[in-house]
Length: 161
Ligand SMILES: [Zn+2]
Image (cartoon, rainbow, N blue to C red; front, side, top):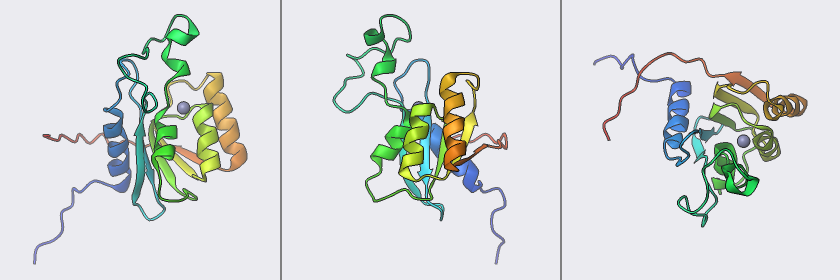
């Protein structure tokens, strides 16, 4: 009898890697964010990345960050967290966790709270001083949704696909 492998990836590594992999699907030239929603017993329930709604072509809608409001991505794009929540068709997300590569904005925080997700594991917190993130943390704190920074092991995972 041989012993089990010792270098298998942890749950945290697994789910954050899945979130990041989902982010690679994004067509946004500047920001690729991925999310992975996980049940309390470590089953993946849903994934999402930032993109335009169904039927809104990546080739026709703007990815620009500056210009007239209607010529920027901001009024059209759906963030990865909201996409992951909306992509879930299996019931409710009460008590679930969400892994996301970037700290959720205020709009996603609202959706996370209302969906019943209770824990956020985030990769980067790149915009902590913006109203969107300050408001997000305020609402999450009020709602009792806990958030913790993903503790990177620094492990590199290479996949040939
Ligand atoms: Zn958001």
